[in-house]
Image (spheres, rainbow, N blue to C red):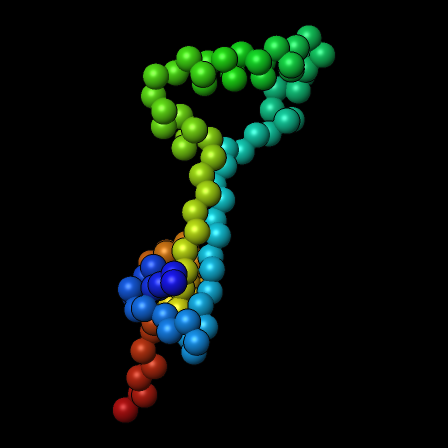
Length: 103
């Protein structure tokens, strides 16, 4: 039997009772096809792709793939899901202003 736990709070899920959420994240290098479009007619795009693929095969550093594409998967409990959806990029939240009465 597979046992699941929340990847944030580490709480174990009861397979019969607990609701579990799956978060999938893909991070990949962006490519802007319009960048450098002025000399686009003279470029051999297929040759450029071939050169990139060959350089990736020849590279000794196996982490080059992680620089181009990564896929991640996390299991979250309902409470951690709410926290994640409020701040998915984990930005620091600004301090809330206190509303004091003017006595």
